Image (tube, rainbow, N blue to C red; front, side):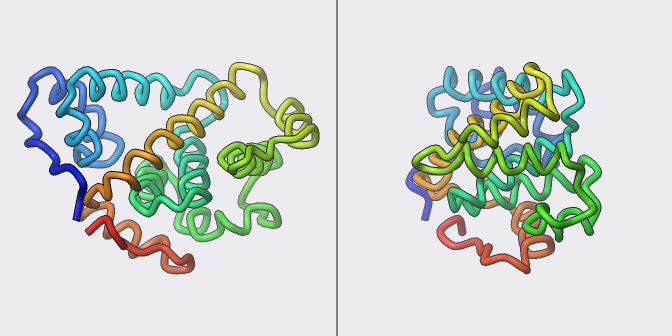
Length: 196
């Protein structure tokens, strides 16, 4: 049972307009945003941050950003965000093969050396305590420019916020996210759990 009940999508006109962004990324407005809008300034700031972080300014693709978000969320144990990020990765071109092989990224030919560096960075940066070390930094600098590293860490940090928000709120998963989790996360220990 969620800690806070989400408000209706039309509760705040400004939030509703900004949240239309999620219709492209997920196909629906997330319940997390509908919960945040109990304080509209938080919902608006979050949506603006999400849009800024997910903008593609360099070579980091929309699909890669969602896979980074997925690894970050799985690493911290947030089932809500795992379902959202795997759904969004698929919507942004992630093949069934890449989605299924994400946990074998280190050895998979489906992922480039640059992606492997970013994925290692995501796991290290989302760990507590933080596990980013000199070798991970070096690999990132070898494959990504400084702006792209900022984009990648922006995704990791954004999902750090979302992981804490949704796991603490026990935010209810939307049907589309549940379907994506059931389809793409069967090989993992993913389950809806408290997000019913």
